[in-house]
Image (cartoon, rainbow, N blue to C red; front, side):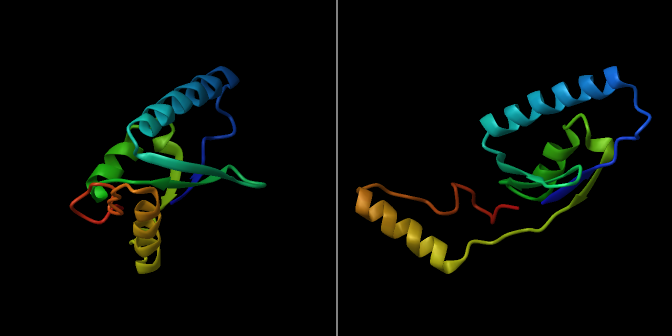
Length: 112
């Protein structure tokens, strides 16, 4: 997913900082829940690329809407499906380690 923060430039510095701190706290909670898996900054912009793992589109929307910056985020979602090669590679790695691996992440449905 791609996000771009469109917080108005005239937002007071104190409010900007409050939102930044609250956003970071909520993102860390989503990480601890296994929902937010990875986050990258888009160089030269106020954008990010994020990897979320959710049960479905509603779960993803709820996670995004819980972010303090959500009202100012432009969000572009690109759903992903497991590639057969990745599933095979995960199974081979698990076999080599002598462990069982569920490439679906334990979800009944494809993650969003």
